[in-house]
Length: 211
Length: 79
View 1 (tube, each protein chain N blue to C red):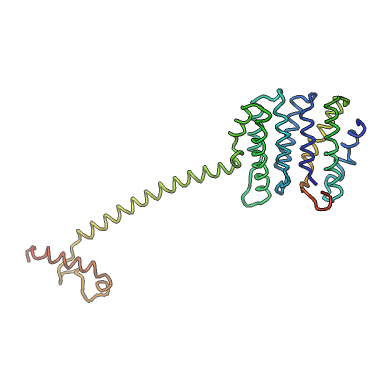
View 2: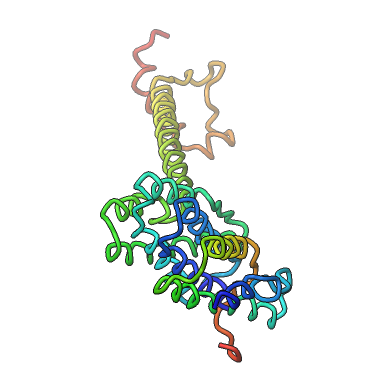
């Protein structure tokens, strides 16, 4: 029980040991990373805070430079790929988000602005990197879809316009000529408006034609 | 204290039946880690562990973090 929290307390103490060099500190922070992302269930007993407190203890160590923290936060962001069809991977991602929030809360007490800046800039601060990637993809695809729909609508508008123009320009042959609409036909009964239009056109145009 | 630290990182405590999901095994492993924390704290206040011993604890913790697979929290009976 409480394996993550108890180990976090131990890691915290080890990170503060002056004998630990950069390699040991890196290994211990790797352990923190594993304790955050490996659990296949949500950590709901403040484990994230105790793990974050341990990581903040490491932030007091001058052996770890800003470049290390940037790498570490980046590896944390890229270490866990949530699969939205598998709940266990989502738990890991959620644990990581909770950890980062706690880390941001505790970091100012311990350390320097650069750490907070890196943490805040890290994609996991606002959701997993892959969620962000997904949202970016979705945004791009939405834009592409909107563009496509716009083009399609434009084409549709043009087509409708052409149809309208064609209808207006079309003049039915006068009665008795081949192709002339038959008022008794089913087509003319069902489509009264075209027939009315044709009738109007005939009235307007046909009298001017020489017979 | 050095003896305690050395015992706590063995297969009988921190790695006790590491593959097991049994409650007693998980409790022993988890609370071994918790018991090690004050040992290291005591070392920080007044050093008594050798660098090799400290390195062994670090290695054990790093390994334990990668091998533990039961991360349940509060238990109604055991706390």
